[in-house]
Length: 133
Image 1 (cartoon, rainbow, N blue to C red):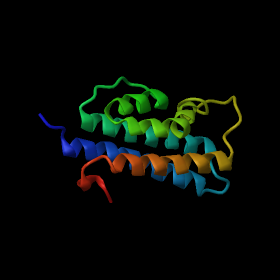
Image 2 (cartoon, one colour):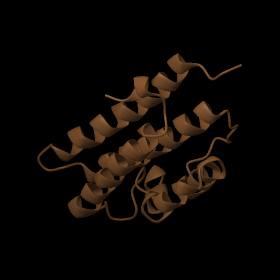
Image 3 (cartoon, rainbow, N blue to C red):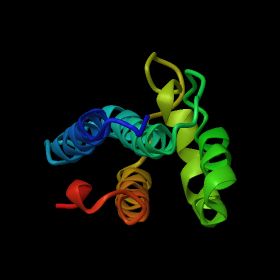
Image 4 (cartoon, one colour):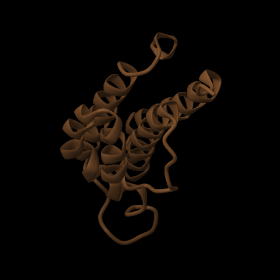
């Protein structure tokens, strides 16, 4: 049975919400970089999982973006080009959820937002036209 387009769109909507939350946190004064970084990681994770869902690939519950990129690359080797930029965002999934390490810098989060946009474009180019804005 082919994948469910409605479910794919739900994955993409969740990723979009994370990207919007990251942008909103960065637009505050002062920016809330720990929350923004977390949502950047989540957006990339959901975009990769949306692609895997569409390809009918089972995936574990993981925040490891490198593992997800490589799983996507099993279906489309071009995904390996995302690994150097996406994989470092993995630590944003849990690193800043509790007191401890210093929050990411504004520049680090701006870079993470650029990665979100890069991954979004890359993934959407590989999904049905109905998924594109």
